[in-house]
Length: 409
Image (cartoon, rainbow, N blue to C red; front, side, top):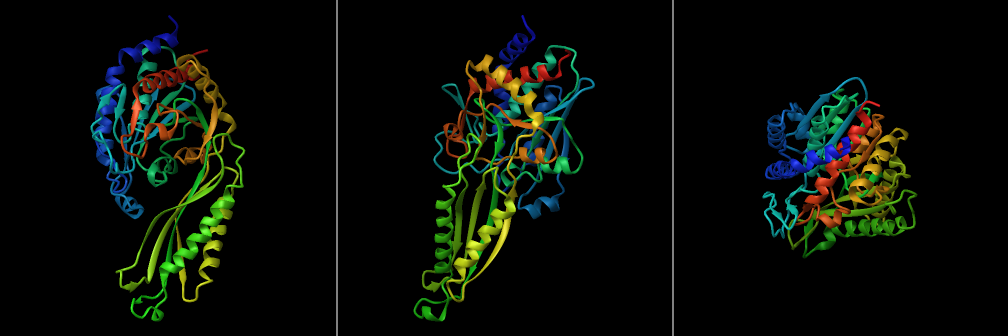
């Protein structure tokens, strides 16, 4: 039996335990907002300790968390050192959007039905807490001579941009791995992703009684003009094509609108929140300047309307670094063996924490237990779920990859 076969056999023998581990993670809510995620980190540390892994707890200072709009963050690092050689980090995030409505399964139940595990974050990305933990355990079960280290990074700020998750660990010198695998999808190796700019636009007018509207300035009418200008830009974005497979074109979404005080009052203020996805080829500074100009020119067409624009988030795109080749080749090789199909490289229109590692010079790829597509798993929708066979096979691929990169030649 080859060492790869022995890894597979260990994972098969411990797979029920891996499923229970994932269920326990799903059963602790990490809705963000509000973002009270320290309790999940504590539970994760307990589960890790039960299998002999000591987790360093790195709480982010409360003022920084509150200023960010969250309640608590404790990031975890597990360091497994085997000898001299490269450090390979495995990162997954525990924070997730609230479950919303329409669930047929308990979003925090971790129920298993027809070979699928249901629950918020079961697919993205508590699943890879399990993938990465059990791949590392499988690696160590061989008792082989290894050269290097594995680090598990379990962080809690992906939904708000990652600056207090991996960004915090990297900025404070708590880690500097040589290579990174981050939570992702079983059927492709992602090597690039979009950037994201989120902005808050406050449109100011002047309140007035609806019986005498001429005495006011309607902020909602101003907002409509601005929205029309932004949506016109969206049509232009469709004419721009990315060269990265899996990424199509830039796009803009206005995800939240609020304003007004009552039906019989001319609105004096309307707030818009927008999300602009940037393809890897775009310059973020130019994108932001362009949007600000479009908004300002639209507002100028209505006398009395003024606007305030505040940047909420700027997440740079992930660009592939040349050093990621060993990761890509190993995952593709073992994905082909385990899944019985080619595992292509691609980009994704999402944005992730991985860009932060890239900005610190760490070659990275995105790969894990997730589905073929986000849509397929209902991620961020009702009845999010993970196909358990994907969890089993992705764990084998990651374990084999770690072995190839760290084993003695």
